[in-house]
Length: 170
Image (cartoon, rainbow, N blue to C red; front, side, top):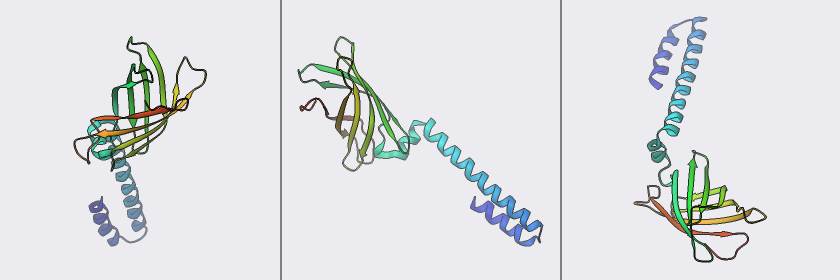
């Protein structure tokens, strides 16, 4: 873009009005066009190529489908599947927990996700829909990243969650 503007400025300086203004208009529209095309290509590559988002977000990158186990108050496991969706400005998580007999137990969507890439932690505030409970359950979670290096996203996570109707960490 710099080369194009620089070359056109030499051309514009040799042209007298009204050709000067036409050259200036062409240079301005060309600059906007090149910028717009570049921005669209970067945006497309970030949201269509997983590796480009991974490189861009670095240690903040957690996008994908995650599976895990939560031990309940009774000590029985719940199997969890969560889909993490990320943009450059927002992270959201939708999840479902299942009993060992594969019956869904609850589902949730995050209200807020905060990632601390330096400490390798993720803090989550979410609204939990448990069918056998009368009201929605608000919950907080804190997860510690398992990662190869501080510059990369997690390959696993461990942590706990606590519901608004409980005082015991799960």
